[in-house]
Image (tube, rainbow, N blue to C red):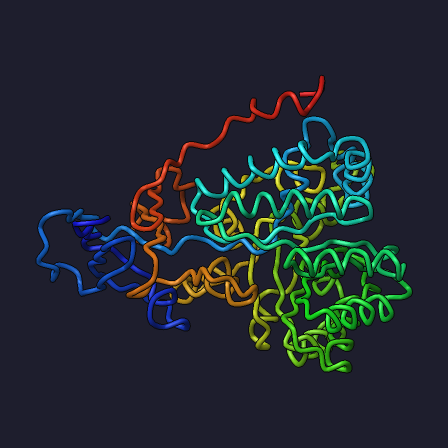
Length: 435
């Protein structure tokens, strides 16, 4: 706010996103914003400024979100391509069919932009998206992503990940073509595997290719309930054996919850040793995992589908959470709302007790995610940082988690933004006759 200060008076800040990452406490303070930056943080009621002062009576202030695992190239295709049975296999088949039929540049670009407008309105400042890259889609999607990244500069910091399936990774020509285009786009190399007889080869090829080109890695690993899956273990061994120095993220890792304790413990220890971060996608994983082709009329799922977030964190593995898919065959719901992810993750994974420590999990969709990805957006509250903040009326954990917080105030560079969400009708012409 040029020429005048804005004071967020008597607000509550979780110390975990302010001055003590391990703290579960809140601190009452006044935040002074000047020229789009946080100019001062002082104890509540001590700031003398009377102009531009807004009393918040203990309302919570959080940094804007970092959503580090999404799929905005798939987003919002549900009306034209539903999942026939809710399973992971059903989702994969539906997306492949939709990609072949519809994923021209204009289609992908418009759905990406729609998704980002949702994320921005909810308070996300940094976002990483995986992009389906089976050739020749890699050329279309990278071109669209680069255009979108430029268009959104200054609003949402974007990163792209090239997503390849096992067959493409094992094809030297396909892997080279995608990795080379990824390097040119300033992207991250990705891949997907779970139960596969050649997991060791798959992971070695990805790690070696990323090392040769100086790329970071962000992979989908063990998104299954089959206890024989060993992609994460193979990845950890490949990273350690090759001495790979880039950032490595493993997404999903669902199977850890279905394996014996000894097997899971060994994999977690190898993951920690390799310096791999794990991102859990609780909403999508609970939606997809443990379904059967017959649907819920035949069998109710027996497990939540998520990985061992608490055990991984206790072992020293950086653990984050993210949105994953939105309104596509992999997840029929969602809106790229970082707060929804946080609230549902607390309920699904039980990181909410003791509540005195629950605040530290704010970093899982903020500061820790930014660090894992290397975003400039720090997702912390500190003097000198951009005033990219979310202001809530809620004053404590219970009040925050009890409601969707649809009346939150989002500040970017210290100024309120428009938080109205785009209308789904904007995409009707892309959906054809099926609504």
